Length: 118
Image: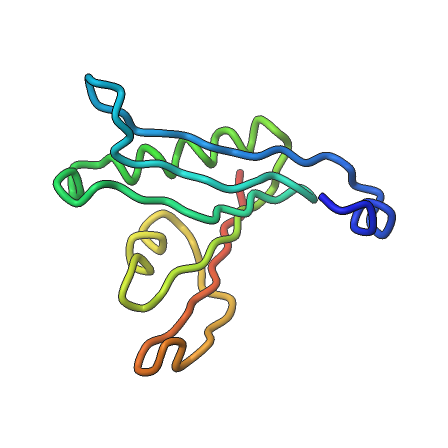
């Protein structure tokens, strides 16, 4: 976190977040990555290897990230996804689109979503 942001907000707490899905050989097959700052979790990346999709691992990773955010005092999460990626997945778990960037890339939309944590 930059000193400018800390000076402007008074919020100096910053913590990276990295949660991994591993197999029996300890290979990484999925994960959730982001950071906590300003009372929010900025979830930059959530992924599951193609052969494991549809088995609930994405849900477990998302829930683990949200639980960690709560434990660090976050009240909300924000993330982004493209129209050809995971918007319906996130909406199933209570995320709402707050902004769209149409035609990024051409013919698609970039969505920004948020969720309030209970």
